[in-house]
Image (cartoon, rainbow, N blue to C red; front, top):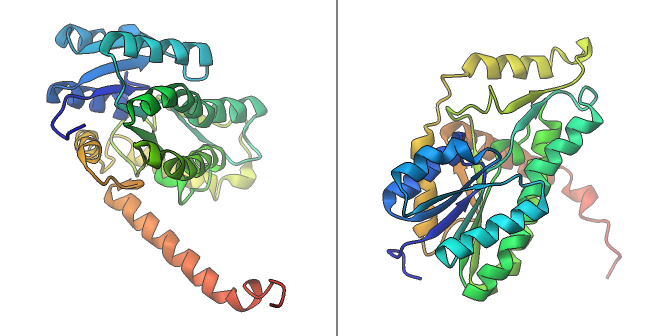
Length: 281
C-alpha cells in the first residue's frame, strides 16, 4: 500500500479526547473511518459531516462479542481495515491500598484486555491483507509511572509489554505496531476520564495526594495540543519506518529520558553483583 492511498481506520473511544481529535483529522484528510464509542450517538455529527467516509459503531471494548461485530461492520462497510487505534481507556488515581478490587479489575479490563480484544479480532484481517498498523495508546505512565497511578500505569505497562512482543510477531506478516506515550494533553482525561480511589487514607496524602493536586492544578492548562498529536499519529501511519514508541510532548520526553538515565545508573551500580550470577563457563 502506498503512503498516498486512502486508508480505513478503526478508532476506539472516538467520542472524546485523543480519539475525537484523531477521528476529525483522519476524516478531514480524506481517509475512511469506523468511529466507535459506547454511545455512538455522540458521533453522529461526524457521520453527518462525512456521510460517505464515516461510520459510527457501538463498541464496549470489554465485550468480545461487540468487538467482533464492530470489526465485521468495518469490513462490510469499507472492505478492509488498515489502521487500528486502541484509544478507549480511562485513568484511575489512588494508592494501591486505596483502590477497590472492582476498580482494579475494571481498569485492567478496559485499558489492557479491551485492547487485546480488538487486536485479536483484527489480526486475521490484517494477516490476510498482509498489511496494517496497530496503534496502542499508552501514556508516559506506562514507561515511567507516577505515584497514585499504580493500577492505571500498571495496565499501560502491561499493554506496552504486549505491544513489544506483538511488534516482532507480526512484522514478518506486513503489520506494524506503535505504542504512543503522551504526557499531559488538554483533553478531558483529568476530568471525566479520571476515576478516583474508593477509599482515601491520610497516610498517602504526602505522596498520592500531591500528584492529585498537580493534576487538578493543570486541568485546562495542560501543555499538550491534541490536534498536533493527531497530526503526529497520521505522520507515523504514513511513515515507511514508523517507531515502536512515539513519545508525545516535552513533559513526556523529559520523563522518558530521566527514566533511561536512572535505569542505566542503577544497572551500572549493581553490575558487579548482579551480572556475575551465571554458572562459571
